Amino acid sequence: MENLYIESTEFTPKIHFDINNRKFELIGTSRPEDVVAFYESIIYKIEMYVNNILRNEKLEDFHFNLLFDLDYMNSASSKYILQILDYFKKLYHKKAKITVDWYYEDVDDQIFEDGEDLSDVIKIPFNLRPRK
Amino acid sequence: MDNNKPILYYKGFFNYTIVNKLLKELFDLEQSGELDDLVSNKIQIVMVEMLENNYKYTSNKITSFNHAEFFPVFKIINENKFYRLIASNPIQLNDVNDLKDHLDKINYVGLPGLRKWYKEILKNEIYSVKQSPGIGLIRIAKVVRNKFKYSFQKIDNKFLYYTLEILINKK
Figure 1 (tube, rainbow over the protein chains, first blue to last red):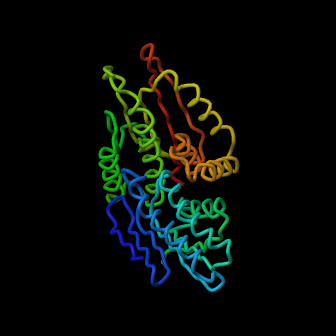
Figure 2 (cartoon, chains in turn blue, brown; figure 1 turned 90 degrees about the vertical axis):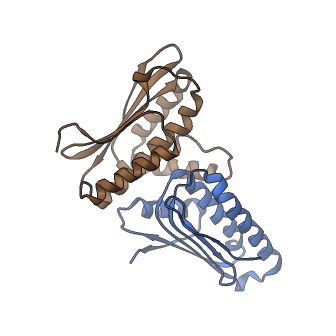
């Protein structure tokens, strides 16, 4: 399976699904005009990847890092971010080490609260990290 | 400043391009020092959710509408202690009761209840094809922590003119 890289635009985030280094990054602003079309192929690739790992890897030794560094996301995007997390949750439940780094600008920032809410919904702990 | 003159104003039906244009105007206001970063960030969230709610769940249901005086309007007014965001648009008569119930519930539940409700909707709708039209309004209420003011004015037998006013505190 090949890596996936999508450059950011003014209203869509940079996506870097780095399979070799076991890292997924979503960075920037998420307010796509067609949120379904934007996230569909990303989520499909993640689904294939996770299913492949579930079939072939010894999960106790498996590490994967998800990094979210958003300066803005709309409520429509949060559903798709949850879908991404939900696929990795399958690995997390099988004892894989899944880390989620969620960056924010300020504790009063909505992005901080979004991180808390999404972590609570998906039941995976997030590392809430102030952006430097 | 408290002169009721909008710092941002648009009249007409909204779409993605118009929302982008208004966002750029908002960034220009921030760059000129009219808004501080944190308030600007809150205004951006509220404005986008208000307008996306407007064009996704209202205007796409209205295929012919000839009352120019009741076209959608969005404005931001800079007042002494807060920014007042006002969005008005025609809605179909049969959508009013659900919307009113939703707005009343938002005003009633308080912040802990809003967060719990918001998370329940996210959890229940992870894989649903359609997004609940109300989730954007709940997110707005979480951000602003002020009660919503709303009204419905009769246009004709099919439409009402819905106005939503939201205050964003400056401190």
